[in-house]
Length: 366
Image 1: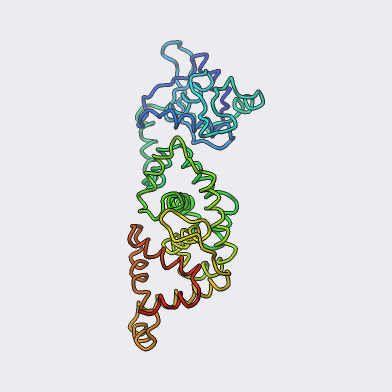
Image 2: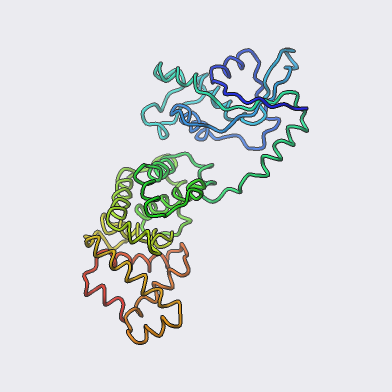
């Protein structure tokens, strides 16, 4: 019967096993296709940055050729092959993934980083006395609890270029994480499923291309997978927009529907347009003081709620004030991520942030 031993193996140990034919790299149990060069380089960058990589599974066997004890790779063959290829000079660390250390193999790394690389520990489960059926049974159980990848997780698995890296960096900065928590935009589970990265990518696309359908995220990952011109400007616009919303509007967002993903996306893009302008947008326009915008946010939320009850419609018939928000209510209630609805929301939200009082009130009365 199979036994499992959990241990951390250094890359130095893996290299030595491979040199002595004690590591059997074969795709016997592999179910994935061969990794592309970018994915292999991304793994090396993960190690160089001393970030954790997924667990590797080995089976302790007798090498049929040497008749000596060896370790057969059950899961992790692509990862270990990439590590060995980098060490042997067959794989170059991509400059797009690491501007400081990119363009070299292991031999080109500074000596202290070479040492850290070899000392990097890989979490490993070693199976002993395990038959093939036992190995397959184990993986059947592991896969039982595997969640189906969502849209963002699929993009994460496929692309490794500068647009992905920028989205992840912006979403994970301390200021961004603080904002997500302060305004209650994402739960811990949603962050674990990369929803904040998808949101960041979506806003970046609007900053780069104007109001777009959410499917444009995938195109951006493809288009900017090798080069990302305008990365720094787009990043600065995103940071400035999130800072403005966090510093000036956080309370209103946190206690209202503006923390809803649909509302918050439109608020962020409208802020980016007001502060810096976006392609085919309405800005740049100077935003009003935060206290005035928050007042409008509460008024807008109350007015939009009137569309949802018979009592609300009765109030509208008496006052007549929110009728001009009917198109906005429709665009928000559908909660779609298509261009027509996003454009309606954008027009209203930019006015929310920037319009003088008289023009703001006129939008309500039609």
